Length: 232
Image (cartoon, rainbow, N blue to C red; front, side, top):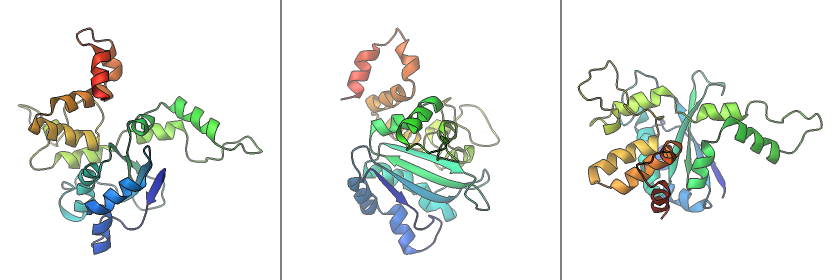
């Protein structure tokens, strides 16, 4: 399959079937194996977190908190969280997209203009000439690229505190991250893990992916050689 959509139960549901859907590694690995090389899965994750919620590994959101780690163990290379406030529910709803390939990951971060061109090229024309999509365009897609701040805050409440959330010698009212790039539920966890196990190459390649434009103009590194090594 190129695309799978999972909309069965909420991860907050306290029943065995919800445990299977959101925390069972063999099941999520079978999902991974059922997708094409550039395939992806979209899951709904229930009501979005609030800033005052505890860390996601505690309480009713524990299954949602574990999901990203289990999906990465299943083999997914890119995981993205986004929020939609127009679903007709009492509160904003959260969703997750897990991708198998680098190509899919780069498509997620395309500009609004590139997305609008792709929409124009791929959709069947209407007789009126008006887009058949009433609620989606490039600008809307760009708004999904950065997860809501509440996801970052509850992530940083974890104990032990993730390395990317630490602020040396600074006391803050609520946990924040010291990196300037957007919060990435996959990369943040893996940067922390890689620092612990000393996998410097993967850490550097993650940094290359998110800062490619800046590194191209850095005369202190051989950009093309680094890019070649990271593609191996």
